Length: 304
Length: 273
Image (cartoon, rainbow over all chains, first blue to last red; front, top):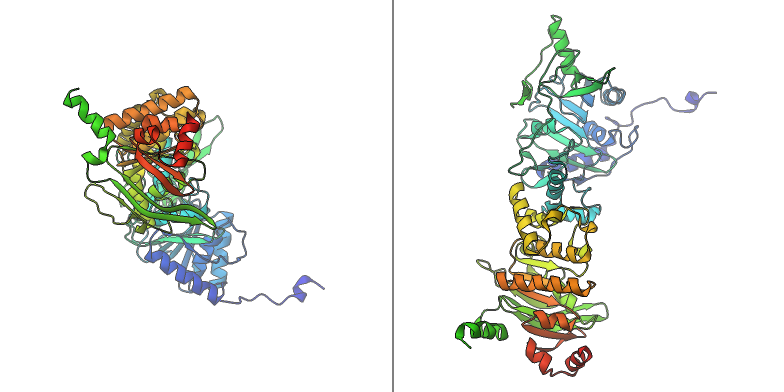
C-alpha cells in the first residue's frame, strides 16, 4: 500500500486554484484598490501551496486575474529562470491553462518580485508586484491603527522627516529600494522593494499595476495613467541608481539596471538584471530574430 | 513717569482694556472621565500678547484644559474659538480630526512637561523642528534647515548641537528643542504645560528667561500651566486658579497674588510664602 493509493487522484477543485468566493472577494478588493490608487485594501489572504513571504500575495492576485487566454510571465529579481519564478509560473499555468512565456512583450500578466521589466508595458498588460511590507509608515509608526489614521489624514510628516534625517546624517537620501512614493497626489505607498531605477516606470504608465502582500493581507494598485511621485525635497532631486554606464558582461547591453557580481581579485562584473532582455540581446547579436521592444530607459536615461 | 514708560505697564496690567477682541475664548467646558469630573463649566478668555497663567493642585484639571486648547481631547460640552487672521472655524471642537491637526500644526504650539511627549527622541533636534514645518507643507530642504536653525537659535539652543538627538541632551536642552519646535511656525498661541518642572533652579531660570524674551520680542500669546506659583508670578499677566475642575478665582496676576479672594487661593499663596 502506498500513499497514492490512499488518496484521490489530483484534480483542480476550482479553476485557478482559488475557490470562487475567494476570487470574488479579491476582485472586489482589486476594484476598490483601482478606485482609490495607492490605498491599501485589506483582504483575507488564502492558503496557497507556498509559504507566506514567498509571493503568496502576488500569486493570489494573478490567480484571480488569470484566464485560459492569458500569457503568464513570472520574474524574480528580473530573472525568469529562478527556482521560485519557475515554480510559480508552472503552477499558475497548471491550474489555469494559461500559456507561459519569458518574453515581456508576449505576456498579458507579469508577476514580479523586486523588479519592473525594462521593456515598456502596454495597456493590455497587468503587472503584479509581490510586496513583503506594504506599509510605508511602519518604520515611523509601528501601531497600525495610528498608521491608518495617518494615511486617512495624509499625515506623512514623519516619513518626510526620515528623508530629512538621511540627508542630515549621510549627506544624501539613502533609501535604496521601496522608495516611498505619492500616488495620485493622495496616498503614499511603498512600491515593493523595486529599486529606485524602477519607480519612474510606474508614473503615468499605460499598464495597470497591482501590489499585493499575502502575509500582511493587503493589496493596493496603480491604475493606468496615474501619477506616482517619489517623495523628494524641492531642492534635492530624485536620483536613480548610477547604472547608466555599466555594461552587461554576457550580452553587452548597457544603460539598464545591472546586477553586480563580485569577481576574483576584488572587482565587480555586471549582468543586466532583466534576464530576458539580455537573452534577446544575445540572440540578436547571434543573428536571431528576437525583437527587443521599446524600453523605459534609453542610453541610461529615463525616456518614457 | 513718561507716557512711553507708562503705556506698557498699563498694557501688561490690563490687556483687556487695550485689546477688546480676545484671541481665545472657551465657554462652558465640561469633561467627565467615568465618575471623575475633570472640568466643570470652565470659561477662559485670553487676549493677544498676554501670558495667562493657570495654577492649581494636581488633579485640578489644568492640564486637561490645556489638552482641550490643543484639541487633543473633546469636552462633553463647551465652545472653543480662536480668532485667527482670515479664518473663521466656528467651534473648534466641531472640526474633523484632519482639520484639527492642520490648525494645531499651523497656529498652536505646545511645550509638554515630559519632552518624550513632544519630541521624537530618535531624530535630530533640527529634525524635530523641521517635522512641524513638514506637516505644514514645507518641502525645501534648505528652507527647512534654515528655519529650524532660526527657531533653535531663538530658543537659545546651541547650534553646534542642532543635529544631536534629544535623547543625548539634558532636560533643559530638551525643553529648548520643544520650544523651538513650538515657535517654528510663529503660532498664534503657545501652550506651556509645566515647562520647567523637573529642571534644576538655574536651568529653570534660563528657560523662563527665554520664554520671557520670546514673549517680549514676538508678542506670542501664551497659556502657562504650572503648580509653581513662583513661575506663574514671574511670567503671567493674568492668573486663573483651578480646583476640582472649576475656576475658583481669576484676575490680574499682581491682584491675585497680593489680595487673594478665594480661600483656596489664599491657602496657595500663603503656602508659597
